[in-house]
Image 1 (spheres, rainbow, N blue to C red):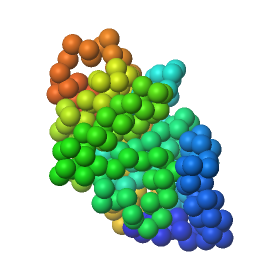
Image 2 (image 1 turned 135 degrees about the horizontal axis):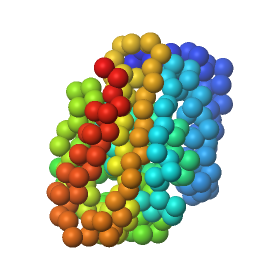
Image 3 (image 1 turned 120 degrees about the vertical axis):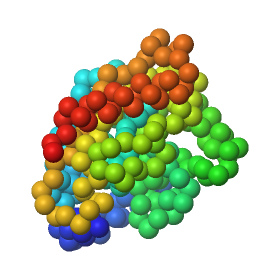
Image 4 (image 1 turned 45 degrees about the horizontal axis):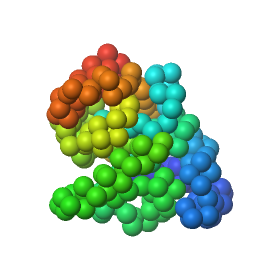
Length: 237
């Protein structure tokens, strides 16, 4: 929370203009996805620097040449998506829980990203949303899906990846890109204001030919292992 306040204080003169632009461009009927995301991609590095956070990105060359893929990162906290937005140039959308849809200001960021919301207790509604995601993946849209279902709240340790999170990728026969996030939890989920480096590792993707004979729980295990191994190799203790 302290770092969020620091970001706000150090951006106090630009903040009204940023809020105006974000609210204006959040209208998906008037502004296309590329335009909306370009603004977020431009503003996020500025906000991160003012919060004393540096993004150390690796593996951009692993991203598929064609859009229409899913990024599957480990989920450490509120900063995860900001790290990805800064390092990922192409538009990417997210899937989030319904409770977050109307959070102050954040709701406009969700609109900018074209976020889809699921009610986790409503299986039918969740399936409908994931079918929409599948359709959009086939049309070339990129998504971020946190397969743990919730943030780990345990530093760089990860929770079990849920096989069901991979069904939309399997149904769309699209590339699956594991993403290892390291030390993101230190940004917003601690009270530290110390300079911080968050690592983002885009790992080699799994293409349909690689996983077509696997069950979703097996895919989840492979992706989880790739991320966990990357964290162990790169974590600074």
